[in-house]
Image (cartoon, rainbow, N blue to C red; front, side, top):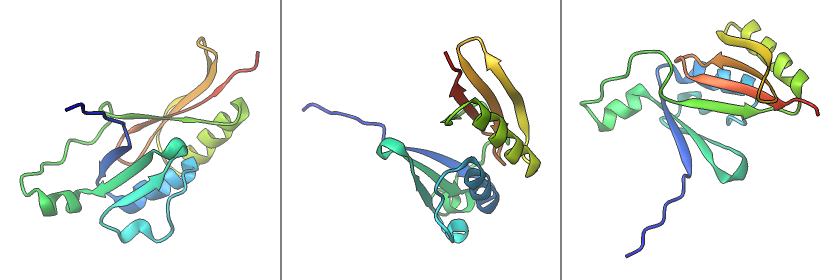
Length: 134
């Protein structure tokens, strides 16, 4: 029997669903209104992918042995392509002005992108980037 696999979704277990959804709304993702009290939230992404969020309490309800990981990033990194270099600066400013941690301020990377990193409420790194002209 041949088995085929296709990456369909990325799931993140979160400590504070409301804060996490507010953060990803700032990033520009189409988080459904009223999702803050849901036991599971799915956000559609380009190309048919989905970004899924599960509060720790939901995971614990079906897996009583679940132990939340320590806060901080490094396990999953997300990258958001923006419309242009100025959009990287503007979105970084909007996110950090809302009180979220800016891990890496915008800069022109040697690989040809305007690039920055912000952290979501659980410390997951979200890279903001856009190709540099020319």
